[in-house]
Length: 236
Image (cartoon, rainbow, N blue to C red; front, top):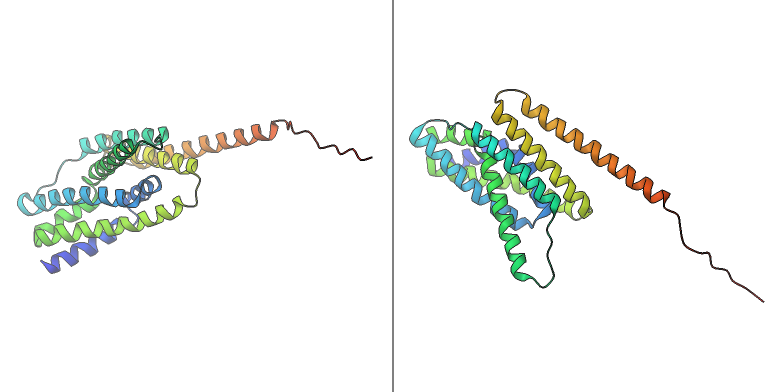
């Protein structure tokens, strides 16, 4: 079991480097507390990898993922719209703050659950479980993915301290839209470049729109007349 744990940890950790899950983790970390993000990732990863080892060890079959990708893509678009809307909390509403925290946890766990179904890390876990101890593969793959995503969470938390709230909000929404379009198109046209082209198109359009809005606002600010009256000092 120990050898299976170490092997699966190393394989999944390396597989997660540069994966969309790390970008997702960083995106969520820009908006929410790190412990909420890591908790949602841990729950989702534990469940997904339990399914993976069950498939690999007991069934030895792959799961069709086209419909899951479509549903996941739609969910990410909803997350992007939710991010654009923002969270409004009054100072004396502790109960409401608690509800927002629970909603964020559920959203994060659901997003990672949908994104990881059929992902390369899930397929790698299925493969490892066919020839190794399934308990060790389950634990090692879960810890490996959480550790890799924790690196992205740290990066997201550091960026969140140095970026304006509006930039964080819009940037996170754009990333959610990119993930959503990519998953959706991957489910509709699997094995093609549609997902990459769609994601690149959404990212390019978002950058152009965002830049145009920033330029227009800056011009309006410069065009506004100054109503300040100069101070006139009358000296006798």
